[in-house]
Length: 227
Image (cartoon, rainbow, N blue to C red):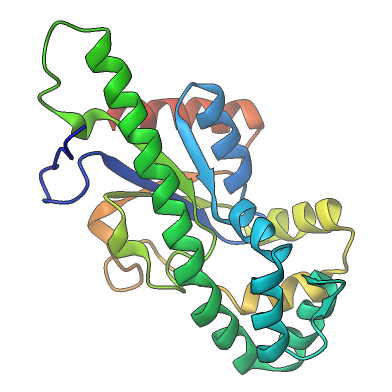
């Protein structure tokens, strides 16, 4: 199938990133998007795959001695190294993010192609606006990795700090001080939502997650109806 180009001259479909701070509810949002029938991919899942790949682990051992065991990256040991050395986070992101994003877009491109092929096969009319085919990606470090420019739209999930901390403690079984250290290493989503604080502000749709799960779903559906 010949590549169909969208209005920005890129790959022919609408690439939507879902991001937000740790504990904001990004995964919950993406699970609901997938439940509604959309294609959704996860940078965390891709990273988890890479951690078990021997070539990737070998490179990580060179960059972060002691971070691997048995031919795979040990996440707990890697976290200890990162928490001890602030520059280690920069090194990790610089090495891993290009690899993650390359694999992510391969999968997003293929999902969009399959959707367009299926629609073409089941329709007598030509799809004149492939832009209407949205493909989603959960990208936790979107702004930190300066990947915001690679997407057409961005859903930023926001949540108050108390709830974020509580959520991560319950999910990961860690202590509050560990959560706060992780939060300090990320983009500050508590900043006012304006152009000064948010890169690619014109692409962003903010999704507040300070209520119940049903309230979050209701807000999400309204957003999806406008995309």
